[in-house]
Image (cartoon, rainbow, N blue to C red; front, top):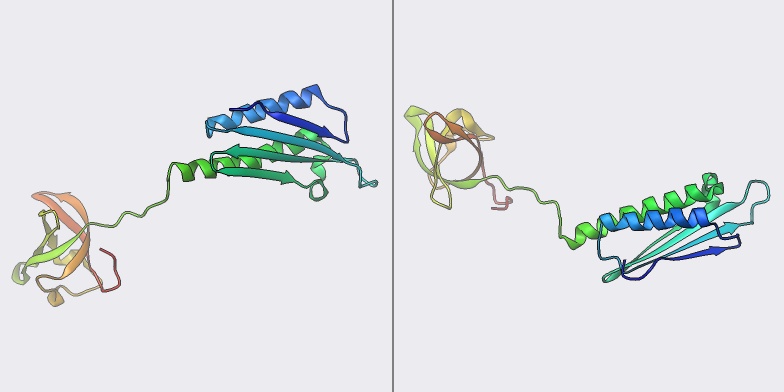
Length: 187
């Protein structure tokens, strides 16, 4: 962390043990993102509820380049937060999830879906029940009539665009499945 962690206790006596736990949790965040600029933690005891024990409210403000991540755990909603250590644990779990998400965005880790290989039917041999696909990079892929999905082999024509799944056959690469590319498919 670029700046030392700031810990504030409100409406309660400062606790050295709780402060140590908070510092440990804050230091652990750096394994998920190593450019944390600052971290402010406020632990506040709520005296509003007289029928139950006092609850603890924990707020974490974490500053990272270009963003401030904030977690504010409301004690009214969770009676487990009668224990300040539980309130701190829950708040740090929540900020950890936010920090992991932010770090993923910074690394530009976005789910992508692989587009199956594609090409055009270059030649058909209807009497021998096979054809060949020419890919944009010039590869020649064999396919058998049984590999064609969602169309009849007899309806195929040279020049039609197809997507295929490739595997290695006895005599080189071959398409295990072949699908026609319609006008709504991305190539």
